[in-house]
Amino acid sequence: MFTGIVEELGEIVRTTETGGDSALVAVRGPLVTSDARHGDSIAVNGVCLTVVDVDSGTFTADVMGETLRRTALGALRPGDPVNLERAAALNSRLGGHLVQGHVDGVGEVLSREPAAQWETVRFRLPGGLARYVVEKGSITVDGISLTVAEVGDDWFSVGLIPTTLKLTTLGAKGVGDPVNLEVDVLAKYVERLLGDRVGGGDR
Image 1 (cartoon, helix red, strand yellow):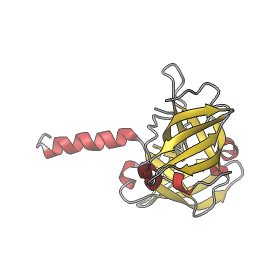
Image 2 (tube, rainbow, N blue to C red):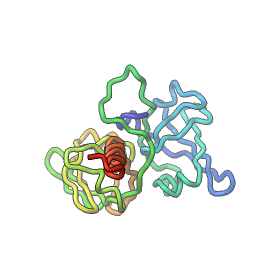
Image 3 (cartoon, one colour):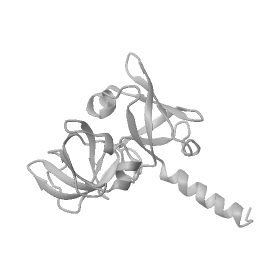
Image 4 (cartoon, rainbow, N blue to C red):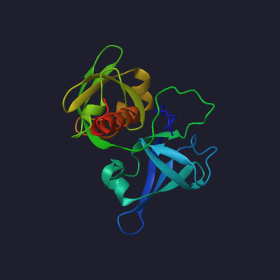
């Protein structure tokens, strides 16, 4: 479990195919590897990955084909920056919202509108996800917990403060670039519970 508060802007070191359609990804992140051990979880652009090995500020993780197909990780190349966050500890502050690290779909940057103290960025929503996104609700974009400013049938927008622009990958994302999206898991549970009640005839 994560909070969507990026700890470090890391970098893809290399991606090595390991047979089939899986890969071994090496990521440089001195902060997140400072106490990392084999089996720990680290979110990379919002994707929960399991640490296989740690060496001199770089960790490696196995990425299955399913993950490569359903997220934007497959498009990353050596040198690309990535948002990194270690799994949350039970005694830590929940600065963002509950993030699982399970990507629901890949969106893309539709537009950017700079302002004096912030920037409004609009993203495309993949089909089927709009019902989980509400104005002033939470959404995770490339592992960053953000508050939805506006939402349409197939898009949503957020306001990014200077800190987010400077310390995460969103500062350099251009129109058309893919992003990993994870909707608020609470919305999915509510939908499931209400669906079961209605389906069972319980009002």
